Length: 314
Image 1 (cartoon, helix red, strand yellow):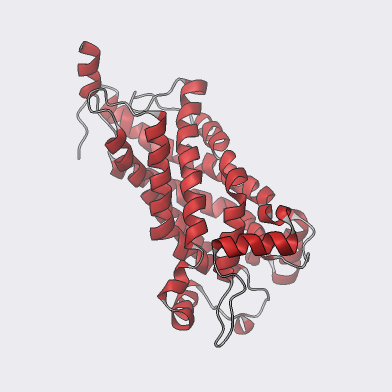
Image 2 (tube, helix red, strand yellow):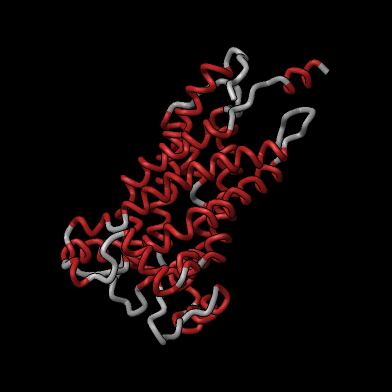
């Protein structure tokens, strides 16, 4: 009984703290890893074999468009990562509180998995899809002269999409994005918590602050499974987001299932995992960077309010 009473009164970290920690981590991640995201997008959109691999894609882009081309789409990417991580971390915290046992304050692995999936669905619909549509449209453009590019920047791109395709155009590829992000976050949050406990004996709310490298190891390991499982959803998402409806024109892909079947029929099953290597080069390191920052923010809060069992401000 005493144990339950202690756990019932044990402070928890409020959602807004986790949201702030995630947004700061997203800013750092975006700045470091944007070039890999550009290469991933170019490879996924390459239907003719123009690029021979990651390094050929990167060197070709730099040679023909300049070094700055490797940071194309950075503004929407950084903004979307900042907002996405804030929403992801905050909504996951809220959902976890709903799944916690009211008597012990503990959450089961199933509850943690569902909380992560729910957070992924929310971020996909509210933040990820419209920002990634703009980012991908900007990244697929090739050339050095801004005058020859259809989209002049993120704001111009968003306005043109709405004008030509309607507001729904900003949510192209929403279905595979929901499946990708939901699965990714379900796996990531569950795995991150598991690795923290197994490797560092760290439990949420125990007042222990991990070293940044420890958080990065856990984040890196937690970020590896998602890309392999969700590769087809990511390829389909990119193809759906990249295609634009010209006046009187037809769309090549009619939806998620049609896109999967078309890509498999025209390019083979392996094409559904195009861009997997750059995803593995981006997502695990990205999660390492994000958690390395986020855990320090959360850790400072735990040290101040949790370590000595001080009631947390709301």
